[in-house]
Image 1: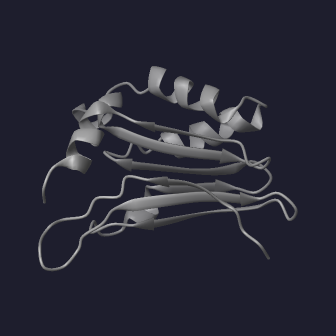
Image 2 (image 1 turned 45 degrees about the vertical axis):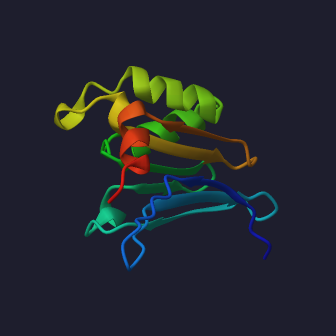
Length: 133
């Protein structure tokens, strides 16, 4: 199976002796209509909140300050036939400041079954990604 990687989010490397990195990858393979998400970070148990995949719809990764509703809600928007870019705009508009953080603290990547993808990195998330660890 040839898997086409669509999006990688937020690679952060430190100048310390050992590299530290946080990233997510979302992908869909058009021929088989299979989608997946991979996450790597130093936070424990991110698999419970960062990746969301739904058969026949697509895949989402929401990182940095993860909003727990973004995955399920984003896939529901995709299932209605909207494009990934529209899904991200809707998620950000409905964010509501979960855990005292808003869209500036979010990173979102979303891909539909057709391989169309969209990404968003808020200003706070971008600043954290470029800061030395």
